[in-house]
Each structure stands twice: as structure tokens, then as C-alpha cells.
Image 1: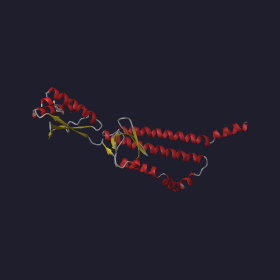
Image 2: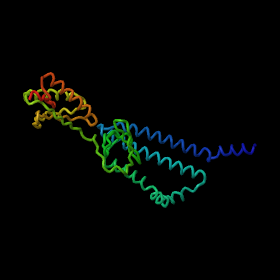
Image 3: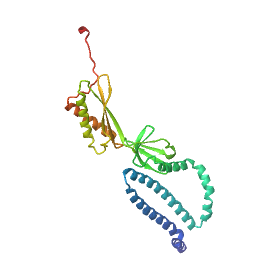
Image 4: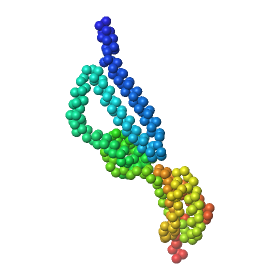
Length: 273
């Protein structure tokens, strides 16, 4: 029994016991320190786009640092247990070639992720459209990108497959609204009413005041004159702004006795013809 306790005591005193624990704790503390530093760095930025870009780069950097620390700790532990890590590192060239062939797709994902950052495809928080799926970039990693739509559905894409994506957040969104109005309505009155509606819309926080304007008559339809207005707003708010604009227009038309024509069916009784 004493021999067993002596062996346990000697093992606890040996670097083979406390060495891996210290290595893991030190690596964890280093990661927490680096994580704290880069989190503070992500707050800084001249504008929202720059902040989001910093955040995306930082998320990628965190993943790289995490994997590097795991590899370093693994090599330290092997060294503590007497494994010749120098020869192991030297053999990594051959192993790397084998791994490269076995994990070509994973390497393509990592390279694809780096290209996305360098070419500024998108950043975390951007509204994007991939094929028929429109949503917000919620997570960006070394291997994959996650996009969440308005329904809460999440599309997970391998970075190597992101070759064509539409970024809807890097420029302001233009809403073109066609307002059908009855021919008998006075043109000058319609113009005045629509301009007053635009003045009201411009007060919204997400609307660009300088780029929102009345464009004039767009076309003559069968039962209406179609007037055109343009509203520029922040990406992601266009649907709410459009609904609000239509509400204001409807209210303004009712207050000013302006008519929006609608299809009508005229029915004749045979005896009256």
C-alpha cells in the first residue's frame, strides 16, 4: 500500500502531472487576455461599417489563436512526456502534405474565409442575399458562414462555396414608389401633397434626407396617372419604411380628396339593354 501511495505522491510531484495542468492554465489565461484586448479593439472605429469589419476580422483571429494555442499546448505536453517534438515538427512537412490531400475542402474553406476578409465581401451584421436566401450575417468562422433570415432560419455555408453573394448593406437602399392617381385630380395639388408626405418621411431616422425626392409623372395608365417618388434609407429598414410611406400617402390622399383608382366591373341586366 505504501508503495502505491509513494508512486502516486512521486507522480504528483513530477512534471508529468503538474506540467500539462500548468500548460493548459497558462494557455487559457493567455487566450483570455488576448480575447479581452481584441474585444476592446473591436469597439473602436470611425463608422459602423468599419466596426463591423473589425468585428469580423477579430472573430477570425480568435479562431486562429485558439487553434494555435491548442497545438502549442499539445506539443508542450508531448515534450513533458519525453516525446521528441523536434523530430515531430520536422515530420510535419510530410504529415502536412498528407493532411492537405485528406482535407482539401477544409483548406479551401479557410482560404475562402481569408479571401472574404481581404476582398471585403461582407462583415458580421451585413444584410446579404445568397441565391434566394436573404438574411443577416450572424457568424463568420474559418470554415463556414451562418446567415439568418427574418423567419429565424439559419443558412450555413462552407466558405469555399461563397463565390457569388449580394451584399445589401454597403450602400443605401433606394425605394421607388409608383402612386396611381385618378386623371381628374389636379396635377399641382397631387405634387404638393406628395412633397408634403416626403417631408414627413424625411424626419425618420433611417431615411436619407438629401436623396429622398419627388420625381414627377412616371406614366399614363388606362385609368390613372402614375406619379413616382424615391426614398433612400438604411439597408434592412426598406420594408418598414415602404409600409410607413404607403400609410402616409393613403392618409394624405384621404385628407385632400385625392382618388386612387381601382378596377370596377359594370354589370348590365339583359332587360335594360
